[in-house]
Amino acid sequence: MRKITKKIYSIIFFLIVAISNAQISTGTGAVSILSNTPNTNTNLGIGINNPIAKLDINGFPAINTTYVFSSESDSFMKSILLNIGSLRENSTSNNGTRLLTFYDVPPSNISANAQTIFAIEDRNDANRFKHNAIANGSSTLKISDKTQSAVFDLHEDGTSTFLFLPKPNSYLTIGGRQVWPVPYKLMVKNGDSRFEGNLYVDTNIGIGTSNFTDGADTYRLSVKGKVRAEEVKVYNTWADYVFSPSYTLSSLKEVEDYIAKNGHLQNVPSASDITKNGLELGEMAKIQQEKIEELTLYLIQQNKEIEELKSQVKLLLSIKK
Image 1 (cartoon, helix red, strand yellow):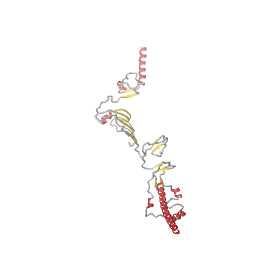
Image 2 (cartoon, helix red, strand yellow):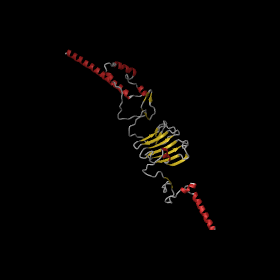
Image 3 (cartoon, rainbow, N blue to C red):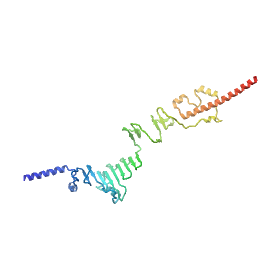
């Protein structure tokens, strides 16, 4: 009798240990839990008796099969493989969706496009993270704020990829982390940046400076430092008006008097003006061309006077003979 009692106690102890170390317990529903095949498999499978992962959940098993659902909502509800967390406020029943859900939606009479959806909601029933992938089609990844407004929106259609940061106060830092406040919408903290295509800027560019104004003028390109180039092309008006018959050419005596009084040519900026306001290449090139053309007129005028003197000298010499 004692031996039988010891055996009964041993069996009860074994069952208690086995139950306390069980991988899963469903109470009275335990009869629906079957051992894996082979039974040495210690993974947990739902809808599959030979799981290959610690948790292996089977979706709709048939391939190339069109399933039948009563509605789009029915197709989504029957395609949930993961449903974790608190019940969402807009769920219509205790069997509704929760804070974290994963859908494996097969092709059906509702839609021929199979798709997967992974979504995370917050406790105010606002979606904060969603990934959607359509079989043989596009995919999207979206992160939203508490008001359901997208803050990060990535979309690809198999040919092109689109990344949107829709919020006006969006900032992107590459090569490091920038403490708040972030000074620029796009910031590269380390390494070089290279654009192999064209770069279009609708506003201003600063190199070594963020100041684009000089007096009342705003400059599209501002550089603090030296600029080197193989060629600079400037569009501006030109000085051919000097050759117009209506142009008034100052006499050389007037030019001499102006220089004596002002220390520079007329219409040419003084040294102090250049030091204070800088040199505008296009305007300065036009002014210099104006002076070159005026000098040409002076030379022509001087040459006429010389030729006239030569004629007079020649005439006087002939008379003396």
